[in-house]
Length: 335
Ligand SMILES: Nc1ncnc2c1ncn2[C@@H]1O[C@H](COP(=O)(O)OP(=O)(O)OP(=O)(O)O)[C@@H](O)[C@H]1O
Ligand SMILES: [Mg+2]
Image (cartoon, rainbow, N blue to C red; front, side, top):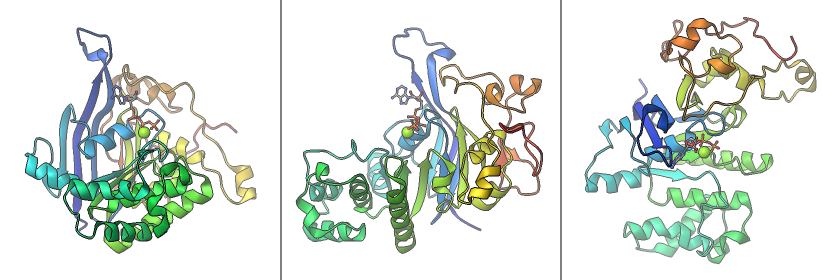
């Protein structure tokens, strides 16, 4: 049985809306709204969703940058919330993060070597500091002479390598990668993802890999979760996910991935979602996706579906009253 290293239970992160004195239920941005997920040791959980669905907020609660409103986060079987200073100190070492934007997440006034050395200094691991930093730089494909350069002297891909080296410095067990390649060109994206895969194999790392679209994580993720308005719509192992996606939202996201084969691409049916993404401060009643769902019925407006298995694959969970069965025609742009 695979062993979960991270378990997220009914996690909520609500932000008060600015300027509201009396806070009613409505006056909160429900950025993360009841998330349940598990990540197995040595594996990658991919989390995908549109801008604003709560991915970075979830990531920030996992590394302790935000204190959740409710729910629990277990790392190696122990709750990390409300843990004492000593335990928190250790956890900060074990769980590291690579940030969304390599252009703003590196201090422009610090040299690359100093950026990578910072976590080591914070933990007083200063023996052979320069050698250790240069080893980390080598491991992520940077040159020793890059040590003294400033962030603006690097390309986007190289900057993200600095961010990865910084995350590796304390020998973490789990790395939260918040859209680590979204700001990079496609060819550079592949290089960075290959590097991450190599590091995972070499060091036995576990990843939570956040992305905007499903094509980015297709090859790296063992498990895939789809997030919409602070909730998980579908989660399963990658194979079942890409072959038998059950949620209408997942199907819409999958239909947006172009095929490399031009013949197949010509026949691709795109499932285009109507309407705008609703505000997380005022999410729709019932199933939060019902306002944009091509298959929604009256029940979806009133009842909240649970994230649960829909067939014999008990690890493939779907939050939908009317999940798609393989081969069911779905209303699409070309119909
Ligand atoms: N500190 C905060 N205070 C108030 N609202 C916030 C805060 N941080 C995030 N939000 C809100 O929470 C929601 C989710 O934001 P988040 O940054 O987590 O989304 P995301 O999925 O990472 O989006 P993107 O793909 O654009 O990075 C948004 O509506 C955002 O405005
Ligand atoms: Mg984000």
